[in-house]
Image (cartoon, rainbow, N blue to C red; front, top):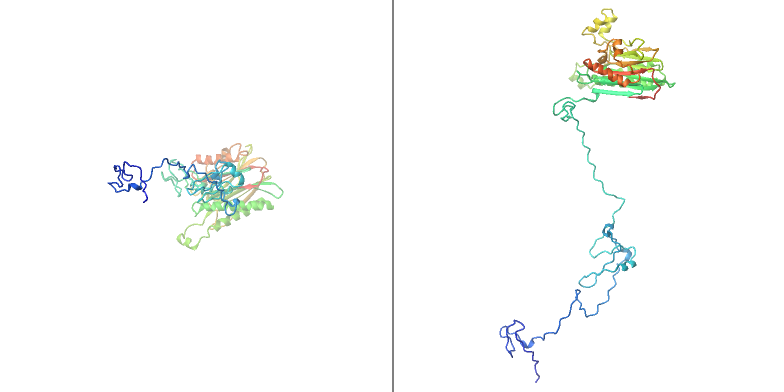
Length: 449
């Protein structure tokens, strides 16, 4: 019979480590078959991290698999992913443990034009287009300018023109206006008593057909007892100025051009009375818009004036050797009394009816009678065109001459400011508007304001 292999004597059970006696074939504790216990090996093999025994020969590295369409079809990584790195080796899968082995930098030499191979599972992004730039943030809406009250210097001005802090009414655009051209200047102010400025003016320069310069000044005074007097004065000034600037270059005589300009101004004011029937039903007794007008044209050696109403033109010589002269006659109750010989000038203008006008521009005027006159001064001077807001404080020609600065011909804007200041210092009971024209007119470019 065959013999069974006898294992070496064991001191403990290989299964439960129960102490054994010599000759035991089974463990008394767990019943383990002691004849099946393996022989303990002499040594254990050393394992490397890739799971292959060091003693076994290393398998040759498999060449990296080419992409389906060749190396040129590999997607390139974005420029930002490359950073400051130079050559980037391709990556490949070595074995079942997915241990990646980087090729050396020399391996890239065979893949010119390929920056970096796509890793499994990566989704390459296109490189940014340098032409696109960074998207601009949407522009913020400009903040509305907040006006500060001119009275308290603390409150904000509401859309209705009043301070939200102290309730003070704020100056409007027409409360104070200044314009200057090379040969003429004008200033208009609301004054100290009126709630708005109902005066208006227009100044401009033109040229006659022979190139002679012509300087124009128009001043209008809205009739306060009429409807929308401020609109009437503005419309009249614009229309008269436009008519003169069109007529003078055509060769129309300046005096005829002034007459036509007054007619054009009257038409513009009359047009303001064309209101819808519904508006007239609500205000059946209101007057039509109305204003006065006075103007002057200086060209060559000629001075032309025109007017309707009680605004005036004064002549003041530069050297003051000759007398100052008022060049217009008022369309007023006082002027009629003097002309009729019923009162002297002092008595007439002292009467409370003195400034009641007898002529004006407007749809309800009795009859339009434009007044014009031409003068040929024999010396240099300045022409002062103004509303009664000024001449009430310098009525006589000598008083006006005393108020006009000596350098008015060289500084017309400064002189106009001084004359407005003279009226304000005197009380400023009315709107004040004045234009100053040096005579003769200098040869300067055409323009308007």
